Image 1: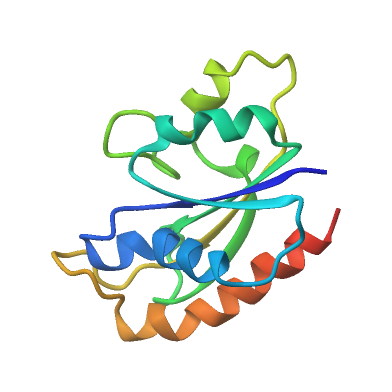
Image 2: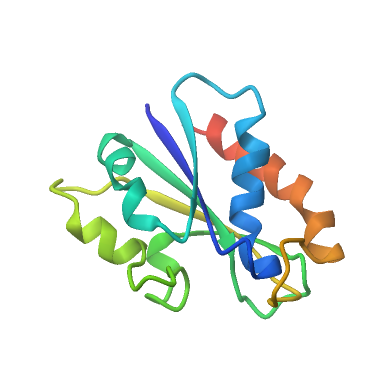
Length: 147
């Protein structure tokens, strides 16, 4: 089963870039050979070829869920409320990209999000989000094992 992990976000905007930070960390981990980690950032369409091969997709991004900064969420894409949940600054989101795929049945998508604290001009994560990053990485690694 081919698993594709997508790290989304704008790393120039502090906690908005948490998906990119997570992808970079996961790229340095020993993962199964059937797992591919892609640092997408905001260039979501550039990652579309990898989606075509995926049996499942795991997305990591900042997510507003009204929890405390650094709170970790795991939901299915179906539970997201359209574009406001996961969106690219370039006008394409996961829902639109999945609809562009030539597959009859898109792969299942699991979304891991972290509640942001600070979205501002910075390439660093806020202390609360940075402290939660190892827990997010662990949760994603457990999800990879759940085939």
